[in-house]
Image (tube, rainbow, N blue to C red; front, side, top):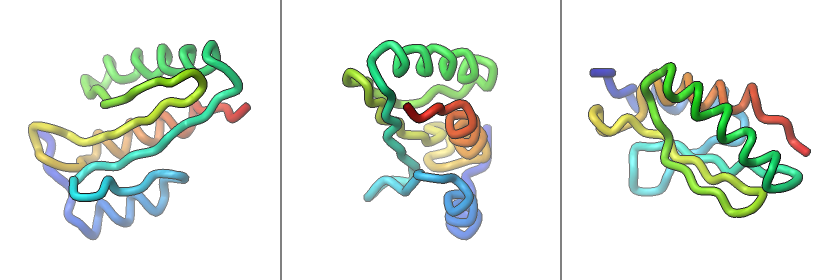
Length: 98
């Protein structure tokens, strides 16, 4: 099991993640990604799914046309862990704004 980050460590990590913020009333982080169209959004989701499988860490997400809303939290740790920060970093690094 991954250890939940302390509030101090979590907040420091979020400050380094462009566009991510805390989810109100929950120990989780969130971001909405916007793409030029559905195809670009779905292609990105597909790439992220492969990374999620490699990490064995799966996001909560939804897709509406060109927007993908993501929430990351490690459920068995009941909060944000290093895995969530790693997944958010991968998502940011592979996001191509159109």
